[in-house]
Length: 220
Image 1 (spheres, rainbow, N blue to C red):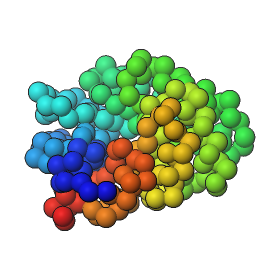
Image 2: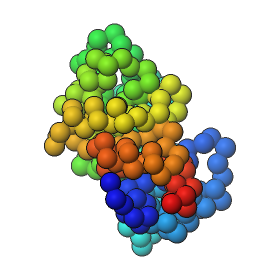
Image 3: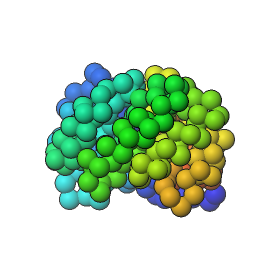
Image 4: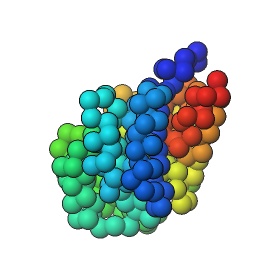
């Protein structure tokens, strides 16, 4: 894929969800987004209002993530938080469902939890963090299929945290094959250089989640 710096930046969601961040760190993250023209900023829920304020008047998406890296929050908690972050001004939500449901074959519970969060989002963009690092091949397929059945906007290979694993071309191709035209694909986890970023886009991702956005763009 031939792609310019500007085109690649427009596919990156600039991420920092480390627990020790301060408001100044979030402001710096948003400044990076404006400097490089990133698609969006990814922050923890607490920092959504700060990101909304800093990015006011831009087209940069304010994204937030919940339920990771464990995924074992109750459905009710995830639904409440999903509603809350959108009320605070978030544009997009990435979240993790309970991986144990997949492992034990409780597919209805897995799909229903995702569907409940999608419903709470009320038409806003939702992305499911599938945590492929914990799943075998058949489980990856089933988890993605159930998420798509539940109405998810994007299927995403990993949160990039805990046991979620790194994005691979093989996994992104698998997600693209499963999603077809029913959902979009986001790659996340371990994306650190230009070559890897472009290879994941070639494989079918339309968004990249990475904390190394500036370094990736500057490396070209």
